[in-house]
Picture 1 (cartoon, rainbow, N blue to C red):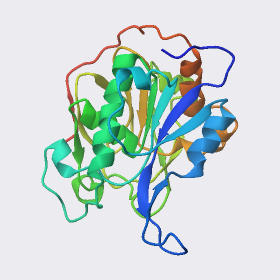
Picture 2: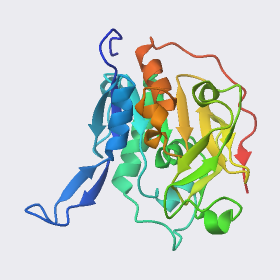
Picture 3: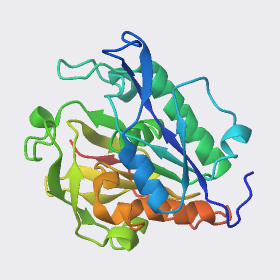
Picture 4: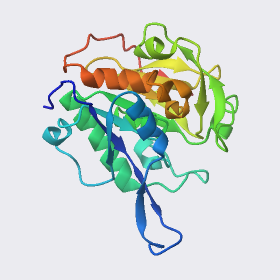
Length: 256
């Protein structure tokens, strides 16, 4: 288990892959993650560590980290949420899917605090037995179209949540996604919604800190000033690993 002291917390940040298009390395794969995550974590006092898709980490290996951020990226495989592939699905990365789901589950066993961002929320939902909506434009047309560019949306956040402590109960946030949560398993509770009914924020009902948001907090000014949900993750990463009190789970959430 990692020692907690005055040193900067080590926060694992997952990355995707892309094909280089020009120069000497054209045609080669590259590990990619936007710098916004790194900037926000550094502003909050953490030391980011980039984690590329790879073979599964053991519980002992992930315990060397103080926190984990599951980042945005391409769609998860449709089969992971029990549905057929849709024409609107982006090309998935099965290796990344398997790595991040395994990493999340190992973090839970080790008591590592976790923040899921956009795709990261969907990874957490699926890892806990939830399902996803394939394409909000058709599955939930009442929700604003966030599929073409970063779009500001309003979120109603449960006052009795970690997220409310970090952001308040009615933030406007930058979203960029075309899929969303349809159902959540019993281990998670919905703590933030859009007026359309779409869950935009999840937290764990018990155990170590888990927060997941269907938007991009790493883009906002408070995060770059060391405040907000990223800072909340880093604060948890600085704290000794203790069991947190249980919160009401309720029945599995069904949106549609």
